[in-house]
Image (cartoon, rainbow, N blue to C red; front, side, top):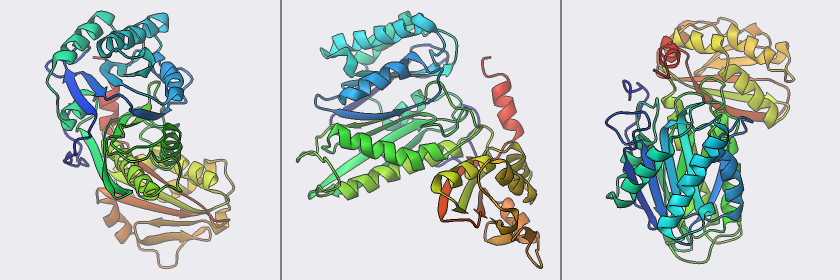
Length: 407
């Protein structure tokens, strides 16, 4: 890992999830002296839900995962770091199928219940010999911690990322623990990273999928680092059912609301952690859009602001150039009226009705931009649509990381 992001948060204490065993080993895909293969064994009866990248050049792991998720059952997860195994043709699929076959033999389970993710360099086939040797070590390895598992799946990440929440479901406390990797090639076109969430709640796979898909829309799909959507992005949620009780099937069931709120909380925490580790990031930026003609329109306007290199570099330079926000609103291709637009930086209103506010003083805005967490508010003035997008600034650090990513 490179130097730790100034926006990093400490890895939390995550509770164990009954029915989940984590192991990580060194398969020597790319990184020297660190684990780069994570193997998660899941007890029989575990259900799964997932969301995957919309990048049409997706990896074999994603293509197979989209089909596997329809069955709603899982026995294992394997994550390879350092090699994305994307754009590798039949050789990439052979590698994934070999991994699935090897794990299914070990667990005496159906290969379709074995999920695989890979992250790293695109265009290089995953070496099957290293994968199989790594799996052999993983099968015999001692269980590892949540933090070790989070570190093992990282690429350009500067700190391990984890989140937790709990809920009372039908009188029982259920736990949720999750970890995620992501730092660059992050844009909200589904779930732009590799993220894994585990819970001991009993839940029907269809309801778990309904919840994850809904919460993804306002969390993982509302973050952006650089407007680029990865070929490998995957978020999976696994529920072992070990907490007992009848499976949740809808919001009509006792405790369903509480579990949903906790799951949403974990999704939001993990999404924000990815932004905090944006490549080269020095500022965490929240863009709140209101007054749009619809929520979807507000989201697209927010993304236009958050993805603008001019907006992001102005914030990196702590320059109170709110005219760049006006520009980004205007280029979004969404309904907007210059003379109804209002813009706020932090708690300071800077423009309203197409003009700077009377007596505008740049000093409090400049002071806000020196902080690590920046808030931009935009009121379109046309309707009730609203959305919140999270991003980071654009610095020389981003160029340094990506100019020599393969070296």
